[in-house]
Image 1 (cartoon, rainbow, N blue to C red):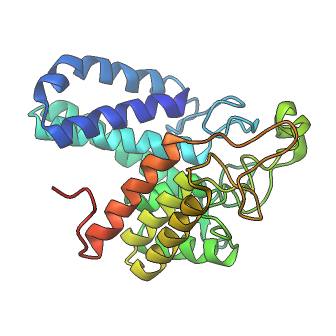
Image 2 (cartoon, helix red, strand yellow; image 1 turned 180 degrees about the vertical axis):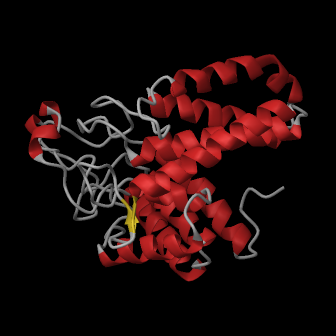
Length: 282
């Protein structure tokens, strides 16, 4: 998938940065470049934005197609990290190339997705509502300006997207015809719309920290902790009443490491910003 390929590049370069494993980078640099080249082949418009097919990103119960915010924010991050890695490791030509591509894509994302009158990045041309994944990552990674970040976070509060469990996927539902038939039959059409995922709640915390809203970040983090303590496990997804999503045909997976890992990361980011010693601090 497009988002999976972007995440692979981002994760590999994060590993290199944290552990200073230049041998890994040297060994796999060409493969990383090939991964970016594969992504570039899915940009069918002159603006460089990726164009995706239905059911092909993390929200894979939704048949959304075309240029999607979330996928393109990931793509921008992958290009940005390629530029940074090349710069640090003496690959000046590659650094210049990827920085230029990242800058071009950032401009395209701003032009295509940001709607000043709405106060957030829209999900796509077809779906102009606020989806938390792309907006929160844009804030956390610095793609959104400080002014945009504050507007997005204000809108998310206005829409109640962190209530009762942080954080809902979208503030409005996708039309029923684009929801996978399996989800509709299982009674969970809201799985990738009004349902809440803790990994999104974690990015919500990180975005709030980046915007300097530490009190609100602490509040969301404490509410996430309370949900986990209540259930004794980290669930996959939560319903509008704050309970883990469950119907006759479906029960939320637990434990879910994706959510759990992101909650740990969000706690670390918050405590570092607040001057607190993280529990796993060495």
